[in-house]
Every structure is written in C-alpha cells, then in structure tokens.
Image (tube, rainbow, N blue to C red; front, side, top):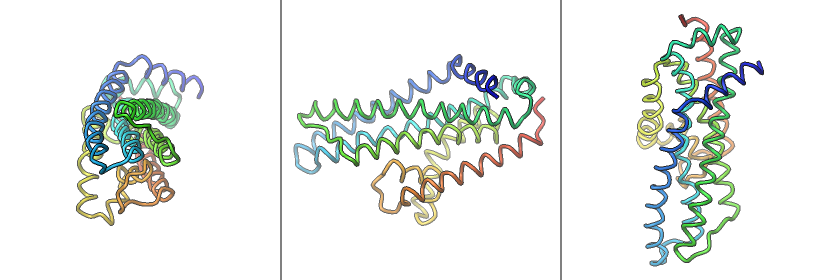
Length: 247
C-alpha cells in the first residue's frame, strides 16, 4: 500500500492541473476579498460594521477554495479514465479496492493543500486588509474557529470530488458536476427548500466554516451530515468500480 500511495502522490505532484487549480483559486479568492475589503472600508467609515465583523468576513471568504479542491479530486480519478491509464493503475495496485483507497487518501491530502492555502490567503488578506483600512484585525476565537472550518471543508472537498470522479469517470463531466452541485444545485435547493437544503453537502459545509445564515445546522451535526455524504459517495464508488469494465 505504501508503494501505491507513493505512486499516486507522484502522479499528483507531476500534474499541471493541480498548479492551475491552485493558481486560479487563489486569483479568484484574492479578487473577491479585495471586493469585500473595498466595501468594508466604506462600511467602517460609515460605522455600519466593525473591524471584528470585517475580519471574520475576510477570513471566511476563502472557503470557496473548496470548489477547486473538489475539482482537483475529481480530476485525480477521471483523468486516468480520460488517458486510458486506469487499467494499468488497477493492475499495478493489485486490486481495485487498493487503488480506490490510495486515491481517497491522496485526495484528502490534496484537499488539505487547498485548505492550507485557503488559511494562508485568509490570514494575509485579513491582516493586510484591515491594516490598510487603518484598523487592527481582530483575531479572536471566532476568527480561529472560522479558519479551522475553512480548512476542514477543503479537506473534505478533496475526497468528495474524487468519489464523484469514480461515479462519472469522464473528466469534463466530473468537473462540470462538481461545479453544478457546488455553485448551482445545492444553493438553489437551499433557497427553495431551506428546511431540507441544509442537509445538502455544500450547505452543510457552510455550517462548518461558520456562515452567518440562521437556517444552517449546528456544526457537530453538519460534520455528521458531511460524513454521511462522503460515506454514501464512497460506497457507491466502490460498488461501481467493482462491476464496471476498466479496459
């Protein structure tokens, strides 16, 4: 298993898509935080917000790295189907389940990488942004809990995307599915049916990074919901991998 993990890790490190996703994610998050900061400076001057609230908003916003973490997880799997390398990977790993397990662990590592970058961007933009506005950033308990939540949802997004990659297998389709679920379907259902929408994967993640919506689940229960979604997707991926042709 150790050799398989090393092989999967090498595949990720030598791929270009990971660097592209890290770069694109950073660009969009920084631009988004600059927009928040611009409005925040006005609100601070008007007295309609506080340095603490603006700090919390700035460190929370990099949660959106989770979209790119999930895309990276999906491409980790579907890319092998796209290139036709999947059958060789199964052969070298010794079994389909071993390959599934190895890619799941590596996908968690990829999610952790995005989560770490999200935390760094959050801290830097939060600190520098408040300083540029002439205020001291407020790194209190709420700030650190938010940062922890941002990191956790990114870690979870990696294997979530990988499981979707196993289910769909086509690279473009799997990445499109990740985008559709994260940016369109889950938010839309949450608005239409708030009582049920809060149990969706993306919306449950909102509780973990401490979004201020009042209709969200409590954090412990949201983590349980996320675990259930991951377990269900992993179970489906394992079953389909066992019966599908990989040649």
